[in-house]
Image (cartoon, rainbow, N blue to C red; front, top):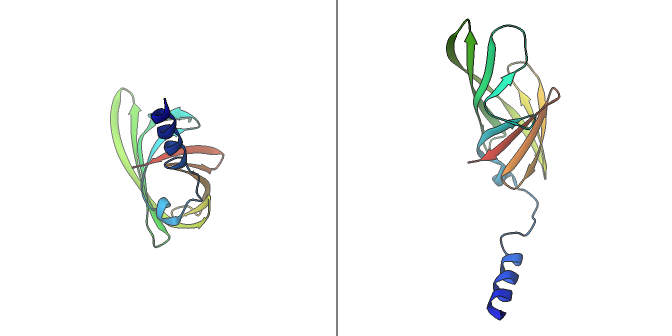
Length: 132
């Protein structure tokens, strides 16, 4: 029993301590896991051909830049194709918050970082990423 209490006490003091995220924790590759709480593939609501996000990888560099590569599956009249969309931009990081500025359309997204999970909101849509 004493050994179990010592083990539990050491676990409580080590890997579960809360710290303020650093920019080093932010940099790297992040995989999209959910959109508005729905796991991938995510069907984009729209009129026309069915479009599904099947993969999205956000690569964040220490140079305050990022690259996003999204794979979309398109189904139209029974024909299925995929396309890859790439976007780049810059970001600002302040403790738990990060703001992304997308180059292609000038939009931005704001995110919060909690451990290995990052949630970004852009145009009213919530994107949940998990660090690789």
